[in-house]
Length: 114
Image: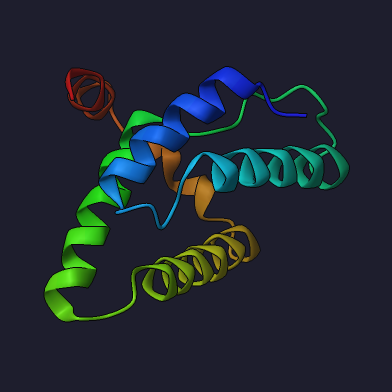
């Protein structure tokens, strides 16, 4: 089950950012389903999931882009989710995590700075 206060809070902010295409109800439902699926498929029942600041910023920018392109926001959001899913499955199949050794401390510090 989701933790309702963060889901409702982020849902309200999402509602403002996306003209109520994504709101509190959708955030609670998405947080619940992601938690259930992750607990069953990921083998780790204790996970903190839900809305975060970077995902909110991405969704807000994506909403603005969809309005500029005159494309439905939820459709564009769904296709991006499908693309990310395909990319992550392909990354797992070809074992892309083996290249993490090429990352240096400089890379870590740059991302920490952001």
